[in-house]
Image 1: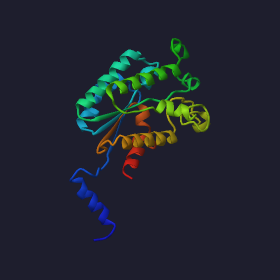
Image 2: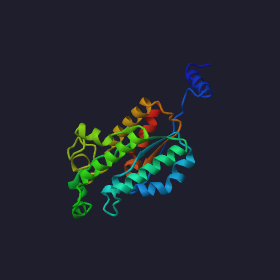
Image 3: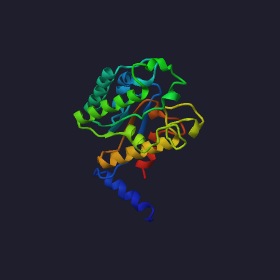
Image 4: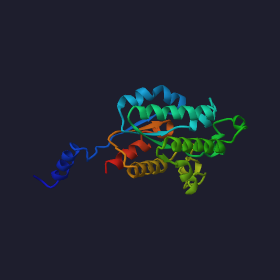
Length: 229
């Protein structure tokens, strides 16, 4: 028997006793989706796959996409229902607060007048507060990605920001993440899963375009690599 085969055989043997995990990460993000649309596809895209953990991040389109805002109370009820359904299906839920935005760049794609009642930044702060409240009430883990970016000063229009902007990507975006941002997000999720000692046999990342990312850069694929190291 070669030395190279020994670790593999040991791991296979340990799996029979449930002490060694083979991680699988599924990207269930769909661009443009709101919490209401996640509710419509949770059975098909999540519960039918019998995950052990679901990382849920939604709220950006609910509160920032002027094509159809969802009021904050409805958003709260939708997220609570999503959590309840996922937990009833046997999976652990990890909530994640969506990042803040850069209003000046958001307004290049959306009419600023539609945010007259509440600024985009305040809208995302409110989403964060709702998610933290739900996490406390239901005693589930939460990753405060929103405040992490603000605290580390990487959520502005500078070159070092992880939110796409002209300085770091040549794009007037203000909402979505750079490849470095997706890598950071994957690392934070991996650290939380480890800290909570969750079973990562099958992890589903559920959300909108911030979860879906692109073919070349998305946090679920980076997370998959990290969990298999």
